[in-house]
Length: 427
Image (cartoon, rainbow, N blue to C red; front, side, top):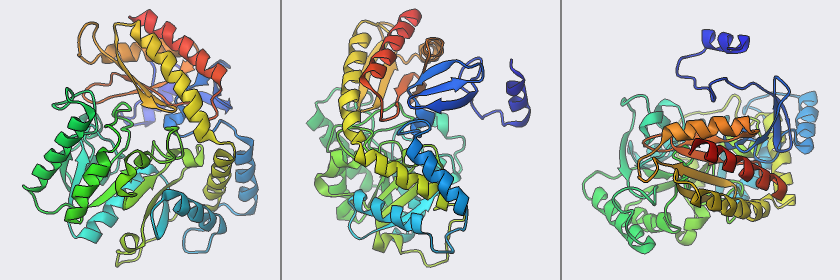
């Protein structure tokens, strides 16, 4: 055990998880690579949990941060802030929400917490619809709507949460149905649920479930849900903390795969927009955002330094068509991984979109989740020079792959080769 690991254990909560039997200290990065304290280089296929979205040490972002820090680091939302207004203008336009207002936070958890505050205040209801297998953050309210027991440490809650079918396509009571029948069954379940309860404030859903193992419904499910929700006046919150900014390749936002009934009422974002800087936020229709009748500010949300980073990062992403790169290179990577998975009895499914890919592992010859194998592949991939993540619903048995969006074809091929060797060593 390293001295830093011992010091960490002495001052950190027992529940503060670390990856790997011999935890890794990352000291610096560049592009799609990071280095540890021993000088070993790794290809990074997880990006600080989908947060280093563009590249490590991206010159445009580091320059913007440095220049802004040289002027002023902090002022709070009590003062006008040009970088914050500029980024809010761009996010409002990109969101697709008409007459949009933007509120910046410091994390995705805080963004979802704010969205829940807005929805419950607007609707005068503390009842929330959420998806099974979901994850929305670690605050008291976000934990209370999380549909994943591994990430929900308490049953106590300020909200009444009702869980809806549909977030996982290949497991559960409707898995055997075709896509159209699956959507119809989930809509019927929602309709039935609403017939047995008082009017909820909102449905919150990740278009692709992140911590849940990169699972998703067929395209159009949330559009079909939206038609039901609209009849009841229930708001739709799209949690885009992991799916936003073009990571899925096909769409800039995850909700756009379900856009036939229009944009969500509220959209939350975080992670990738700051490329490692602490940015989260909420976009909502003006009447929803303005429904609060008490004072509210954010001390650190909209910091001049983080906003400068977000502006530089968003500009780079759009100017270099990183959404298109995610579609092209991600499509190649998914096909490589599916070919690798077809040769392994441990791989149940390779799924995902763009550069957001999950590999679900099972006990050979069964449908039983295999968290032991997932942990072993995580270790073996590290030994091979590749960093990945893991997640999943009832058991942590899904390998999570989400490289920076500047990933090259050569790097995708290299990562796939290392993963193939890691899976072969464990199978």
